[in-house]
Length: 138
Image (cartoon, rainbow, N blue to C red; front, side, top):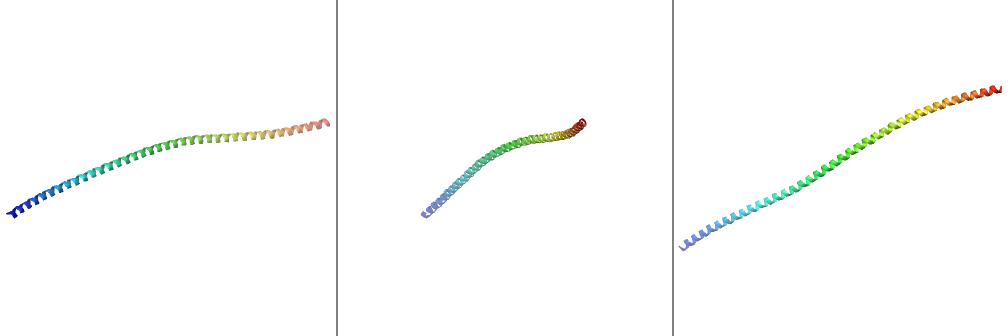
């Protein structure tokens, strides 16, 4: 009977130990599951924070790029209009010079024509004078 009592006690102890083991195992699994979920939540929060940081940087970079692009387009338009104005002035100056050259050439031709006419008249006057001198002397 003593052995049976001991056997029953050992069976009860075994059942009790198995129950405690299973509870401990279940608690460890719950704790591990909870720790895993906590780590995943922390990692997700970290990923979202990093993602937000990089999205903000990208947004800032895009805004800076757009501002620089706008400035560049403005400069290009301003320079194009300046180029058009300078080109127009240059063309006008070239036209004026060509007109001036044409007028100067005409004046030169007129002056040469007048010179030739006056030289011819001078020769006639000299010839007439020489003829009159010769007439008075004769």
